[in-house]
Image (cartoon, helix red, strand yellow):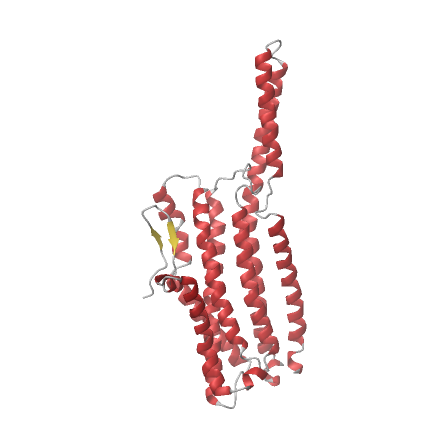
Length: 356
């Protein structure tokens, strides 16, 4: 049975999300180098035997791109996992409860449930087999039996790695969305001008970006591979190609917008609540000021109080209700434009696939 990627309590009561693909490289002095090595090894475990069996034809039919997809997907998974791990300390400190056992055993149980090793492996196997099935539907084959076998090995490995990434996306969306149900603390005076949640938006940009990169490679591969003309003209293969091209872009937008919309709701509610509280406090101070009469000290004290509330209100009005700053907004716009552009290009290419 697969070992769970549990949240392991440490002496400092910090929590660490540590899935199986992270535990292996973390045993070595320089984990980053080992992660690079594992990613390249997975890619070449397909490319080497495939080149041996199919020869230079892999350059003509673009099947070598599967190696690039495997390497990019594995590196993206490592990068996204590290980004997710880095969010935990900031997420935890913003929870209102001070009961560490409650945080560890109740809230972070979501991570244990949705991002366990068993779940990663299940998603990996499902998408690995699905990828092979799509290849079979599209009649991906060679006259050389070993070339066909190694091609499906590439389908299996790339599907498995991307399946783990899909599991991660699903888990991250669920965990981050449920996080705001615990009503974390929002601080409108935080210098990031996002209520202290700029880190949240920056992480979402990374998640969506790495998903899009893998999606670009998949689209390029599906459009440029020399599929059998008879197979690509049938309805079922066409549907399979449309689905496989669309899925990464849908996932990219989902992981960006679903948690961000919950953050927007939390920030908006906080801003409205504080606007009402400050308006009441200012009105009360002003009414008191008008009634102090000749008490100069009391009048001065109330004047400072009103100025203090005005400064707070200025800070509140400058707080954004989306967890993005100008720089991350530009990144988000680029991400949306890239999604739209690649989607239209893929549609155009897909319509012409049968004519190759």
